[in-house]
Length: 331
Image 1 (cartoon, rainbow, N blue to C red):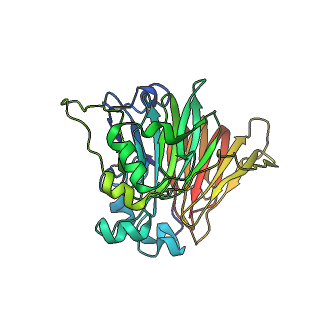
Image 2 (spheres, one colour):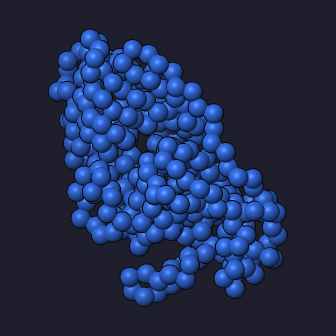
């Protein structure tokens, strides 16, 4: 019998650079201050999501997927039976550390078989003047980079670029980067929690201790080539009755599409169904509505801004009604 979609409840993270917007704007109701990240769709042991609706409500997502590996689909990225992606919301009240992530090969060898970390950012909001770090202004060498990290002058080499609402950035492993203050971001990434900090603005943690840096590991994986100012990808909205869509990103590990649903003046709801090859995750980034299944096997699923919905592979045919924006993520 085809499966039904279900809501997810995230895990929260209280990193020192976080703020209050994930509770204020998305009603997460997570008792952390600051609330820096919510791991919306995750089976990673550092922060697994919990199923929040349907027959498995209250169970951890990795437990459900272990019981039903067919929910993941037949795509090569799901052959291991593990969810290959992790989806987050990030509230950067302060600058994040300057950091870098390894690729799969390095992580497998040096991080106990972990995945590397390829990621994509979709900017939900950013204050005027917000910036992020994306690589270097010009080619570097390891000696110069290491010296600048030790003497605190590295910022002069880092390319800083303006950030605006609705921007998209693709961050490959090896790219030195850092999200700037006042950015509210949805992040889609490989299921990995490996971050090498190069520089942290001499900040201390809640115990007054400097946060750990990982300079040697970072130097081993950093791409030292200079980067041009990142350009926004060409995006084309395709309109259909009741909704519009556009591709934001496609890579080996995931693809991301933005959906704009508006059925308020339509007689028909928007039809939706997953294929056998992949699950899909719908992250509601605006508006609200309802998802119902054609076979009327389950109760209609109401969703609101900030909700994350897991749609198993080969799901029952669905209908979406409302006025909302989604990020749709699949393999």
